[in-house]
Length: 164
Image (cartoon, rainbow, N blue to C red; front, side, top):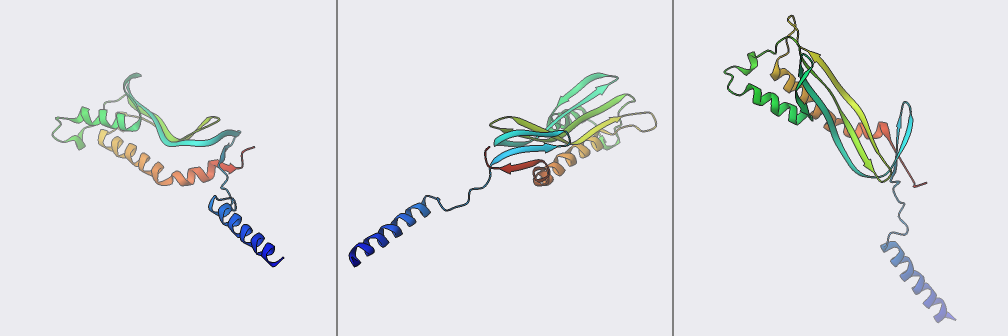
């Protein structure tokens, strides 16, 4: 009888150790994402990608001259300043407009979700001309801020739960 109890105790210890090793006793982190926003919610599912997205354009009197994400637009503005002796003194003519937005996008097993965290719509005027280097600094600061605040945007937007 004592031998049977010992065998049962040893088998229970080995079984428990094996189950523990395979993670059977670990509490699983909820991984099903739902985005909550002012207008409601959207199921995203298992998140496979989180990234910063942006879409900007520079126009002259309504005609697009540069367009793309922030880095593309910054590169194009920098190219336009090549050869300038004092790029900090360059001002854009009246009618040059910079507009666009940036934010976070999540791609998931059931859908995608994007939030806009920053936007810009500036027009160069005779009394307040836009300076290309200042625009570059503002665009780069926008990306830096989004990168530094991405955890905040997740906490404010995404709710994790068990798969329904």
